[in-house]
Length: 477
Image (tube, rainbow, N blue to C red; front, side, top):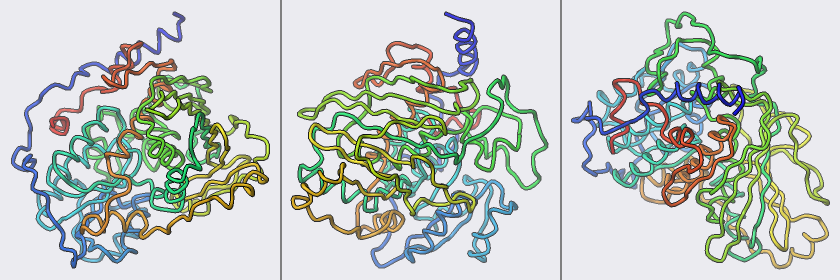
């Protein structure tokens, strides 16, 4: 074992001090009753929706919910209600009660809330969602579902135990991509898939820091408007630094899920659901540019191997991210289109790249190319597409976008398209990929026991370190 491996293992072992999250008595037993009595919204009523996270992406989600006309905004919550990026939603909701701590919001407003949206950093998804579900509130949460494999597992258990409506925010799962893939799969156009290439090679969200960084950033004064304790949530204590907030949290292993967690659910969602992939048995990081133990590599290539599933053949998925890590495309690929429906982040649209976010799907008889979010698939090369065209099935139109689908599900008029039962295993695939990035090691995973069998340290990281004192109750289901 070389010095780099020794250093890596030493760092991760330190991160796992007190990692055993055992049966800890609930701290908020009266508020978090486990009796599965779910509030029902009358089909003639609007959903009383609380917004948790109203800046940047959270603000965009809030705007989308408001546009549906299917909800009443009854509470606003953000850890930094005085920040510039929260003011648009505050201005749109005059007189609506405001909070910086969602726990206090539920204590004071619980009886007036039917559902919440959670547009917060990755590490905060879990406690916000668990608090809401334990109070029998329906939940819409951004992707990925949570930061650790175990947190996703607990969220899936919570969905069943509390009987609430859930939806993960991969909005393309209610758009043309979803309905086309489903129709083509059911008609036998997509069959016998053996390999998928997925890629995100745009500069969006990439940091440009020194790859030799060997510590977390220096302590800075906490802004007077920010509740840093609630921002940290279940995570171990970190002194405040501006490079943790404003979207930068996605770059740090301690808080985010990198490009894979950010984009995987927009690119691989239909592949994962309709091919019934479940969890991989092997995850291999074959390329990690500027790997270090604090933030994500500048470029990554990760191979995921999925076994045969009944009559379905094994599938290998290879993920590429980074500006200089562009995969080869098949002959006859044509142009790489950019999905115009990709949302902004803080007002900035994604810029076209040499190869835009998307995927190539290889079956025994056909090859497909597709983009991200709601982008539909095309058969390539063009000559083959023309041959197949007469046999393609009709693709139904979506009855509702992702936000309306969630609210209509709360009312009882539709079923959610990306509930935790579907989005959970997909999110766990990304959690395993992140562990391979973090450790830099090939991981073997037992799908039955849900354990990593060749790396004890990585296996501990499925659970991660213990939550901060005072936040343990969310791990008791």
